[in-house]
Amino acid sequence: MPALILLGLFMIYPILWSLWMSFQVGRGMNFSFGGFNNILRLTQDPVFIRALTNTLTFLAIQVPIMLILALLFANALNDSNLWGRSWFRTAIFLPCVTSLVAYSVVFKSMFAQDGIMNQMLMALHIIGDPIPWLADPFWAKVVIISAITWRWTGYNMIFYLAAMQNIDRSIYEAARIDGVPAWARFWYITVPMLKPVILFTTVISTIGTLQLFDEPNLITNGGAPSDSTLTLSLYIYNLSFRFMPSFGYAATVSYVIVVLVGILTFIQFLAARDRRA
Image 1 (cartoon, rainbow, N blue to C red):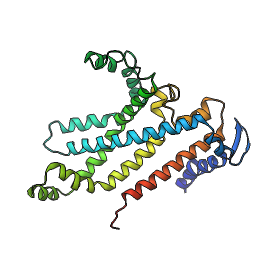
Image 2 (tube, helix red, strand yellow):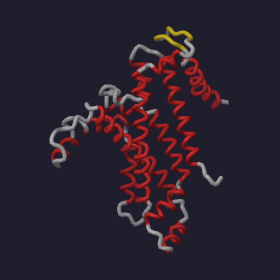
Image 3 (tube, helix red, strand yellow):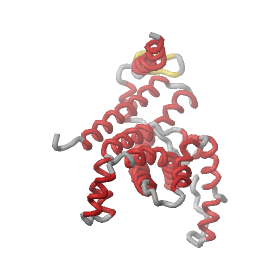
Image 4 (cartoon, rainbow, N blue to C red):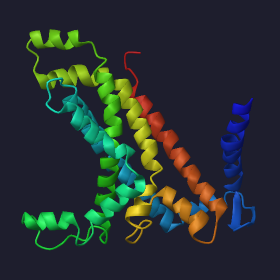
């Protein structure tokens, strides 16, 4: 009963309240029932369209890169003969437990106009002038994608590594005896055996990216420049707390994330379904 009370108080009640609020219009605490006006407002709001486009861009680029890197790192660390395997595993996973504020400050200083990234690239004669990482819309997206990938690749790698270590080694031995090359063993044995884990990491990474808030808020000062890194979650925060509150419209935008999560998760489960079933 205590668990049910807490669940209802902190999860079910807020969900129902936000659903009711999504049909309200007004500012601050002065709101009234507006029907589907907030939904119509979504289609006419250029800031919402920009935030939605940015969020989907981060999702389409960052999630595949992160999952592929995590899979490759896990495959390399699965080799018991790899020198310094424990050290590399710790180094790759360490960003996941690093303080969010600390790592955001580090990235912000690294990609500043006079930061170490520009100094290193200029010292190697790759660029002639400093790149405006945080002042240019394109490069600002690159910084955010790099930050998310750096932070969460190790998290997904741990899942892949644990699953790889549970695969029966006799399968690999039989393939090796039959002369199957290493790349074929990875593609035709390891990847199919990891299918449930790949589905799991894809789903949680998709949900996490659709809810992206911390990195744009801390690294690019809330979606700068020109809202090029503004995300849906950050826009909800702005609507609720940063500007004159519009709680009803903010609740409507939050349900856009819910719908996107539901649609993309369904598509991912459908794609991963065993065709032979």
